[in-house]
Amino acid sequence: MINLIDISKNYGDNQAVRSIDLRIQSAKTTVLIGPSGCGKSTILRTIIGLISPDSGEVNIEGDTLRPNNLISLRRKMGYVIQEGGLFPNLSAKENVSLMASFLSWDKISIQKRIDELCDLTKFPKDALQRYPIQISGGQRQRLSLMRALMLNPNILLLDEPLGALDPLIRSELQQDLKDIFSTLGKTVVMVTHDMGEAAFFADKIVLIKDGQIMQEGNIYDLIKTPSNPFVTTFINAQRNHLEKIGDI
Image (tube, rainbow, N blue to C red; front, side):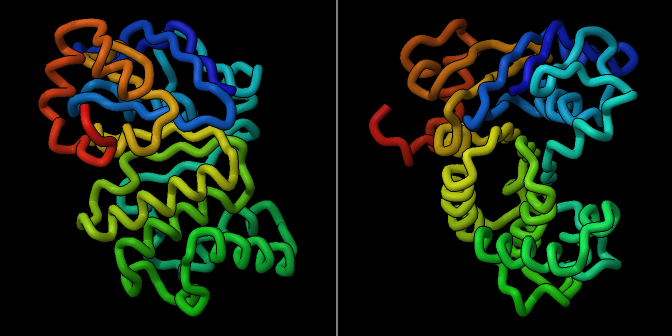
């Protein structure tokens, strides 16, 4: 579904991503994790074309991402950022339907799709006329997910989508998101700093340090067969986040 080939990106003297090769499997959830500033969000933004790599290429469903096909390929991807990134001057319904309206969908099709997404994400339909400031943080994230899914994209990209929520709401949304991923069967790429969250969602975890991939695999691969001392150090530092997956 997604193939990154020898991707590098510099910001001045800072090499954010260093010659990364990464294949992301269709209909699976891949989680990018690592210390702050390791390059995981840069990778996500490179996939959706918000950042152009200095070298290498991004392939989406067999097509190389280029300026002349950027818009068409981007419409195959939904993007969710921390705290939702909603437009404060638009109602919940207007936020969700923005791209569909831009693409001249008719009102009946828009309303049908919004109703489907409300049911899927458990967003209350009576809140659709409210503005982002008038709904809770958890509801804003559900709304942001609805907006990302409005055009029914094949790929869903999430950049720390639950990081700003309190623990109770975060736990509830984690389970709902996992159920949604399972129901839709889409290709999901998620960025998080929480190894427990990565273990909960991921079919594959990609651990990154200083713009380089340290190891790929499931949580037990990283725990039982670490590729280098950093992997062990990172896992041990997050032991308290791994309680959900049992005895490790």
